[in-house]
Image 1 (tube, rainbow, N blue to C red):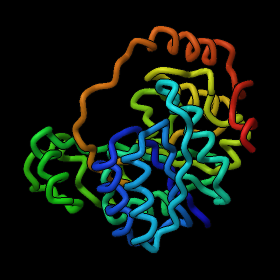
Image 2: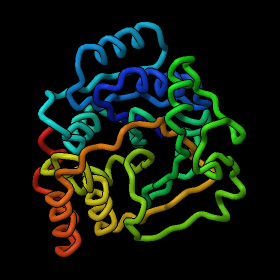
Image 3: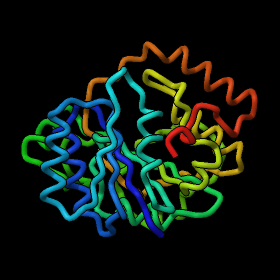
Image 4: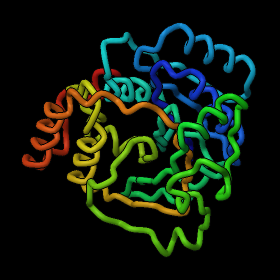
Length: 261
């Protein structure tokens, strides 16, 4: 199965570089890494360009103009460039456990999409990691919150696996699905601008199309670098789009990925 890793980013080149270095340590290397760049400046472009020349990874830079937070559109443009069967989505501040990609592949299943958890690094631990380019963390590392999310166990993962239709905890920072399932619902909704709910609305349409959520723990481990919270000024407007999709039992959006295919 061919896999693309989609990484969203915006003007945080130091964190992105750390994430890319963690991808190099994967036990299973994806077909390509497509960076969904939501309008970053030249510093990010240079970081990506330099990394492309120094790595054996196939890194593609998908960039769009900076017109505010447009993660949905940025993801659609990146996904449209993938020739893979299966897509793994993360954010550009998520350092990956070496088994991360393989865990997603092992747990992939037709008729399902995968939602994973994350461990949070404190501000101090994040500053140290960035200063020394640290990508290896353990259960006993300092500055870790949600420490239980660092336990890697295939046995425990199977025991605590949940298959459900809940939207609680939906996050595209650790999600995977078959590309055809994404195309069948027309990808992310480009109407979402500003932070919030584009991931939940995407999940609503997946669920309404018959693709069930598979929630994993003790697998697909990632470490979330600390950052200031995003501005939530658009949340009220975006909530209305989400509620409309739920109320109408929608499995399609009219302003989606088909514009880029």
